[in-house]
Length: 82
Image 1 (cartoon, helix red, strand yellow):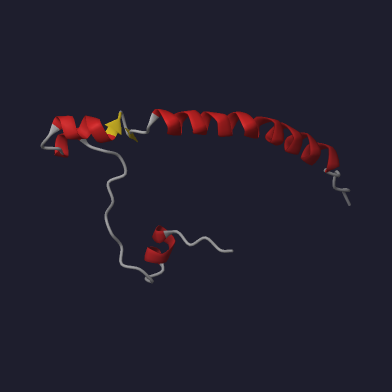
Image 2 (image 1 turned 90 degrees about the vertical axis):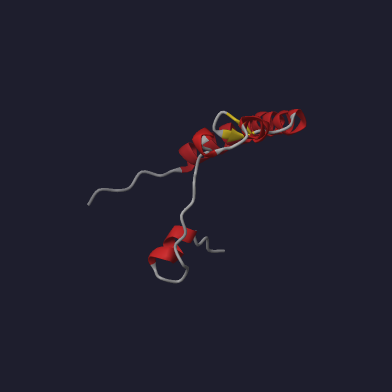
């Protein structure tokens, strides 16, 4: 599998470059209430269910990350200097 980012493809001339606003800009919005309905600070507003599921996913990943980190550090062999 190969990941091709739009910027990489645009730089190579394979896709037309487009401008993108990365963060929401309150100064560009006509209806302030609509802005606050969609965004929380600089992030898209998410539901309580989504935030709960995301938190659970982070918690369930912690033991795996800890195990993987300990395995990768114990199985790494030092390189011989010549």
